[in-house]
Amino acid sequence: MLRRSLTLAIVGCFAPLSVWAQSGQPGGPPAGPPPAAPGGPPPGYYTEPGPGPGQPPPQGPPPGAYEPPPPGYYGPGPVWEPPPPPKPKHRAPKTAFWGGVRAGYFVPFGNLWQRYTPQGYEAVRWSDYASSGPMYELDIGARFSRNYNVFFTYERAKLGTGQEAPDANGGQKSGSTSYYGIGVRFSSDADRVGFLTEIDLGWRSFRAEWEDGTTLEMSEAPLEFRIGLGADIRITTFFSLSPMVSLGAGSFGKAEWTSASGAKSDAYQTGDEGAGHGWLTFQLGGHFDVPPGGD
Image (tube, rainbow, N blue to C red):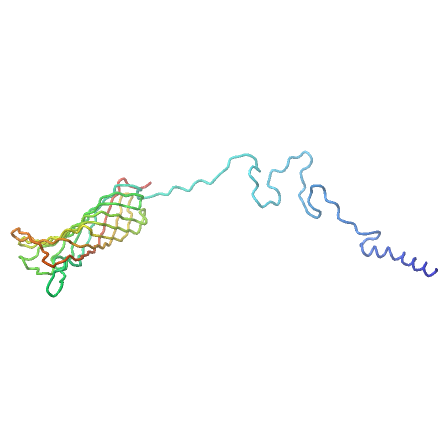
């Protein structure tokens, strides 16, 4: 009995010390966190103090917000938008009457027709009756969508003498060729400097003359094709320059001799056939727009 009483007394003395060691404070178990206020943040979070009684709510953005406030947060007011970008200025007109002239150098090549011989066909070359020479061209049409032109064109080239019997019939005097066509052209930048492309389709004729009045005329070439590549250089609002290289091809369907006495005869003999010819030009053009650009 005595032994049991001593054990109970010793346990009763050390029990308070064990509770104090666990809580860090003498006298009982550790205290929990204070309760959170109704509607407030969780315990341990810092918040800005709110307005006092009778004070209006703050008008600035909510603290700690990184997104734009919703519409109407700052009250009714005008909505400011950035101004529209300035309207671009163009030197070339969008639509206009268009026309001008070109000057350059004409180089003929290819064949006029194929002459039949017992040994086979023999080419009658264009260089047999003509050589290179100066040329000029007249253009008239319209500009639309600023970068496009449609136009009618007339080209005339004054050619030199050919290599085939240059002293026959008193000597060859000259050669010439004319071209009538309709074309379309496109400029990649009509306001400053642009790449220029041109495509034409037309009709060509050729004429060679001798001192005694003999002539050779080539005609019936209604599908002569020409393509040109160059540059479109805008000088002013109403004038531009266009250096260009053009290449064309076609075929004559008729060849006719006219003698010094005026008698006409077909240059094609039995078995002769048509052939293809071509030409190359180097030219510089100047064209006007009416009314001028600047819009």
